[in-house]
Amino acid sequence: MIGDDRLDLDARVDSGVAQLIADPGHPQGWTLVVNDVAQSYVDLADPTRLPMMYARLLAAVADSAGAAAMPLRALHLGAGGLTLPRYIAATRPGSRQTVVEIDRGLAEFVRYGLPLPPGAEISIELDDAADAILRQPPGEYGLIVSDIYRGGRMPAAVAGVPFAERAGESLAPDGLFVVNVLDAVGLLGTRKAAATLRVVFPHVAVIATPPMLRGRRDGNVLVIGARVPLRPQRILAAANRHDATARSLSGDDLSTFIAGTAPITE
Image 1: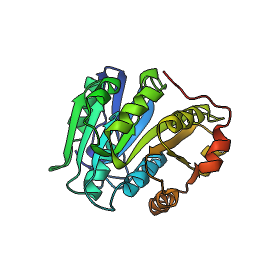
Image 2: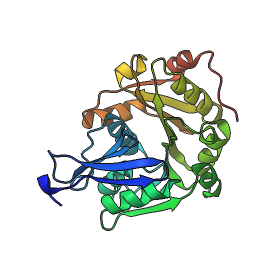
Image 3: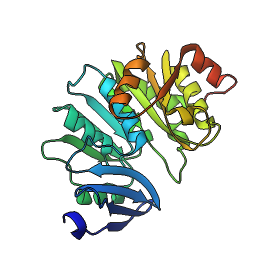
Image 4: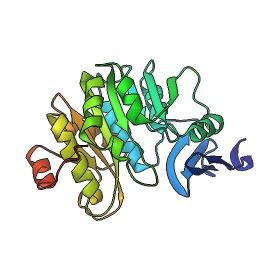
């Protein structure tokens, strides 16, 4: 339905209650809410319109992966509303993307309420990310995004060095592994994620808005690992194009940031 005639949708899913709330200001805009928490936003008419800040930052990282505007092989661990896969499909035609989601009910609800665009090569696998990563071919992906939470917490099985190692094995030589950290004041989760990725990857960077990096609020931080030198300024420039002001920490600045923080080794 269109405009004011649209009805909000809701469904019982494996993880609780999911809702799709119509955006009254945009005829094809929807917010996915799970257990009363807004998870993602999708504009079916324009997948490049990204009102949520964390989605803009993820899009900026995706923009910087591989050769600009060329098709990208991407693995998304955690589905949500499929905001980033839709964005990549729109901005990099021909991209082949795999999405892994453990919540069958949520995946079916999103596919029903927010149909994927015709021709988008986005496949959805119903699986636990910790198991799915073990089956991925080596050197396959230019981008792997881990965005996995249960009850507001990142499961231990996807937070440690072993998971990051398997993700690293599945990356192309110049690929990026991105962890979306939902963090709180003090950024302990971000520090642990960065320390963990540093065990696996020679190059690690943290990207977030300035207030987040000052540790003064709750929100999202991206932690990125790669085998080749990262170009944080390229990511920040892409963020600016998405009207997102961001800062990065890498090298010595990151070492100072995570000083005294132990990696998650299990």
